[in-house]
Length: 287
Ligand code: ADP
Ligand code: MG
Image (cartoon, rainbow, N blue to C red; front, side):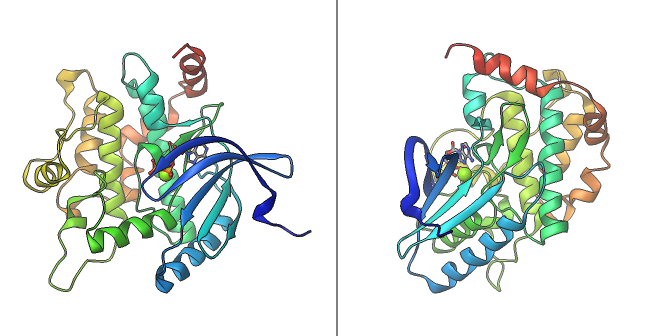
């Protein structure tokens, strides 16, 4: 059976991001989320996108958004994926008070770390763009990652040329090229992004002071890393987990094997709180 992007039928807009936009669409009766990204003229970037899409299609994890397939035209890449209920940044924006209680953050942490570990160990890839809008929730409260590899490559290439916005979830070392140029991307840069995301979920606000990109970047490089405290009502285990993720020295930051043995991770793994029920309660409330 011939597949063509001409069979995609627009239903509604979902959102716009740094390197594309996402729409709810129907393909031969199946409802899905379709992400469209403009192709750059760069042959090297195009080749990597194709390689990444191949990996994305082979991913099988309950913490990774299912990718059904993709279309590529001269100008655009269309990635067809499982339609999820919402992402963490939008969800955070609609709950009141605007904070995710620690036990639910624990559940999310287990899903996020498992997904990142699966990508690394199972697929030999690094996400590169961990942030609340790339962490999606379905109606059952399952937490899944999306937008790894491809989007990350695009964002990295923008960092290299420094012509676009600096994504504020990036680790300090991503902005400090050594004498030989940019160091290879390490999973620990994603660990930093997880830490920033957890602080944002816990407090309800992005931890660096608002303002220009330059101010954020200066704070990222010069100020101590954000942290959570027991005085704010968080458990010592959670505070310590975040502290480890947000070590400014990449060499001292742990990888997934260590994080998956951490008391906060292990406690959350065995915790039976129902994220699905809590999520649905909030989503059914009027905006
Ligand atoms: P961003 O840089 O904000 O992640 P994207 O273009 O990747 O930008 O996504 C735009 C919006 O679409 C985000 O709010 C994201 O959560 C949402 N989105 C992306 N993929 C899906 C999906 N599979 N199901 C539902 N919403 C999605
Ligand atoms: Mg995204």
